[in-house]
Image (cartoon, rainbow, N blue to C red):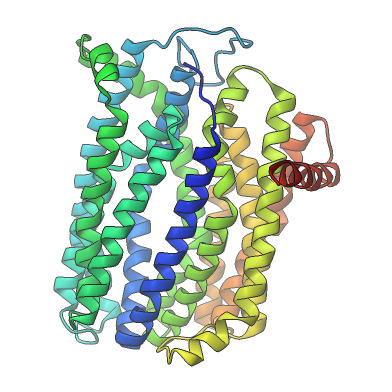
Length: 470
């Protein structure tokens, strides 16, 4: 079975991202208008803590997705380092290996979800108690936090379904499940917010929506044909442990990378909750959320293409890999610049018109943050190209960078009056010193091009494929 990418996959991928953006446009104004600045700030802090405990995933999700792609591309053996190249030779899917992978993934995420729930209800509760001044700044803050913790539990529990679908190359089905889940979330948020439930309504919607995605994802992946092919195998615990050891070899490295990435992108928000007011936190969180939406839309094509890129790596199609990768990055650059222009010049007056209770930071801070995050996204996608080759050479660099940013952010908030600007400057300087240039250099060297030639290829690919479409 070969992993291919149809036009429907691309269309659904962009539709899902557009719909995700549209859902933000529908829900965000109500959140900014109907919630108090303190509730808005608590909402962003909850999302930050939720993303922190998601680090317990420890790199399993992308590793499962990539290895499932290898299996559906004909790999008969999974390796701890590197991949089994088949030089384009078509091989049948090893369904016993696939069945073992599915069983292992499900078991791991059962364990991870309970660990996440325990951490959120203990250490997470203490943090929320601190930032809400003993649960007094926000009405029903303890109940809100408890519901959010349970919703995070289910989100983690069902994570492996995304790996299964994306690994099989069912991009359209993955996006459909996401869209229908988002629709459920939007309807519930709108009804509950307009009913005066407040931030608790957002958390309730976040609790119910994952069940829609889980139901659809299960039906999309476990077709009758596939179930007939994998249910005949009785997988032993020994097979599960052997496969786990293979997955864990690079997952633990990715886990360290994710910890570093969290410190790079999210730890500043965590510290902001301790040093700044909830109103200031809401401003910072709004900027992060909107830039995150821009990055999500800009990087959609790369996410859609990743299973194909993995398959091209397995089959050793180096030129096609370079063309597809450069095209996806060209789209990233173009869409990010357009989104940045909208954020800088259109969004601020819109927030005033809608009488928002939270506003963006100053023009200079937003512009600097956009530059830092574009460089961040650029080297992250180059790093991913290294990872699809089943190698993680940047584990310690990511961790060291994260530690430096976390420590620098603490020093900035503790001993200067720079506030949000200090957090962004620290992140930008640390990343520019190494990661921003190192991993693009490594990948370009592997492809036999320099970065400026890669940019040229990106422009050419975008230009050629755009005019081919029209």
